[in-house]
View 1 (cartoon, rainbow, N blue to C red):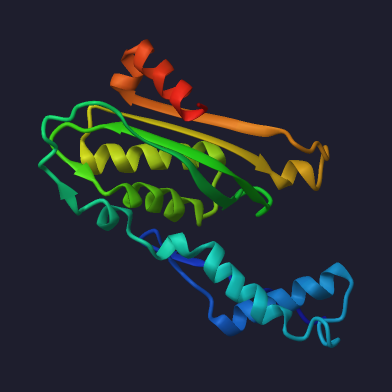
View 2 (cartoon, helix red, strand yellow):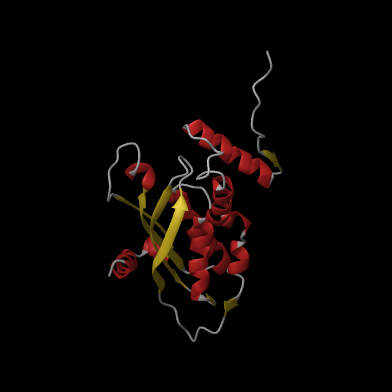
Length: 205
């Protein structure tokens, strides 16, 4: 009896993932369509593999982006400013690593500069880069904080993400309008309760 053909596996070399070819990805989508019980060759689905692969390229484009580069251009003339810099309502569109289902919400990012600041669009870009990868919301929150902490060396970082998970709303328990809130505080935000409370109040203000 012949062996059942298997899809090509990802191979890691020094923690670098060797990606399958685009053609292999297209074939994988066709396999999923057939597994779901439909005909990949019918008119409505014949171009679906291409569309899905293109969408994945956009949804998971964060793997090809360099966060350190985004935060490398800083400004040292802060005119003595030493208070909070806060961005509210940054769009979060990500996918959980457990079901590859979307979770969508808002991120609130703050830091207290020491000697340098970064363009505010770069902070939003950091959220976008990490969001376009597979991870849990807890990991996403941690990664954003660590990137700002390590690249800017601020006096403190505060991150809050408030998101709804479709792995909970469209499958499983089917509970809608339930949001998950995760936070991460470092430096002054972790040690100064009043500062932390001010961040939370401003974030939700």
